[in-house]
Image 1 (cartoon, rainbow, N blue to C red):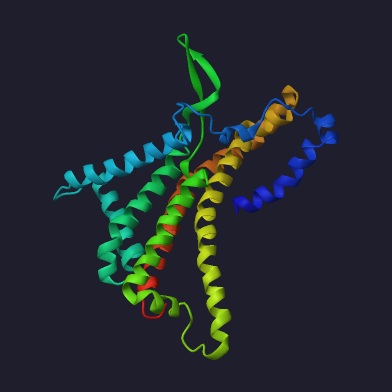
Image 2: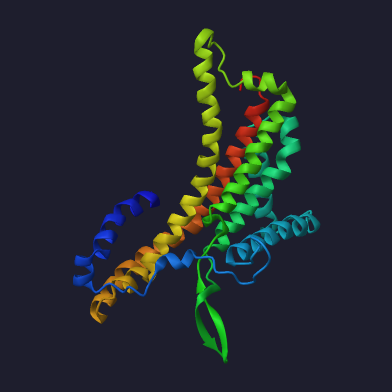
Length: 298
């Protein structure tokens, strides 16, 4: 839905950004919304290991994931409080619905820690991506004489590198499991559906091989595109469109009142549904691929 809305709004944005649109609306060329996703280095290190806000968000999500698992495990009570009840609900979702629902009990016991970690990491990455944090080093404000980075929205999963690395881990893991269970030849034979005989097996095999590589794109881009699209919509509706168009005071107020309501609606929709839904989809597909790799009928 969000991607379709962006697709609808894009022609209008391009029209406004054209010379004719700029003449009519006095486009603010100093405002560059794409810089909200620019990764300026915070700490320069040798090679490609600079510390920037993407690394910061990955570290925060990783820390929260580890703390959640460790602290909750140590503070389990016979009479659960509200926090423990919420954790037990999430645990049941990850164990019963996501993991056990898509693989046999042996595989579920083996891969549940990995799938649960993936779910929590993506969920934390998505959630903190909607919390305004002082990470915009391009624009700063003065507080008690100190130059503080401006508040901004960003998510590690809005950077294609993070979903792609997660996808590669999943992709390699389920192929390794399939080869272990069936052997290389048996695993590759399992790509051909039962009942396909004769020369038709050759094109079917190559189609399946292509689909295996397409999973790299679909699994990573689905997560990346949904989070990025949500951030872009919140950015534009939350004031970016007003700044970009550089309208007069009255026009800015009118447009701001209209877009502010949409920004709040998009924000609640993203936090309340999309953040959890994308973590659920990614971890569920992970379980499906792992379970399918070792199943008799691949």
